[in-house]
Length: 145
Image (cartoon, rainbow, N blue to C red; front, side, top):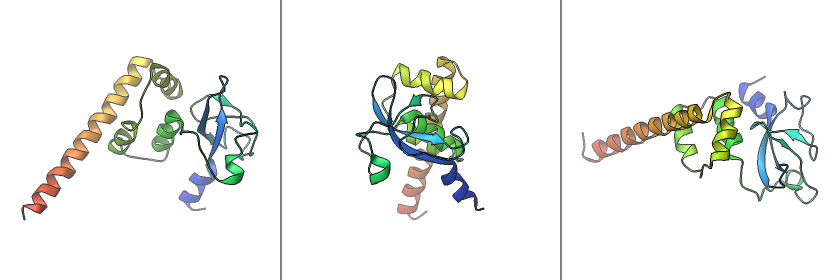
């Protein structure tokens, strides 16, 4: 089996709601969820939250997701699939992190909130380095160096 196919067979996206009824596109891990995605069934998202698809959220069947993606699931997916620290840093900068989001990411990573904030900062710093290097390379190319 090709690695790419395994990755996509291992993970599945589904719009689902948490205990507070907040809809998000969460990522499920088939190894945590009986080895296969079951559309419309409750599952433990990659972020560690128990989520339940709502009858009005039949996005998987229609192939359309209207809720925003869970930033914790997205970050964990990037990490699990081998994204570089700089790429993860660029990704996480697109999200508005709340204290609850940081706490949830920390729980999923087995870190305290302060350790998680340091990890986020490290990813962000790595992204800044990569972006600066790209910018410098573009400038040098434009200058004919």
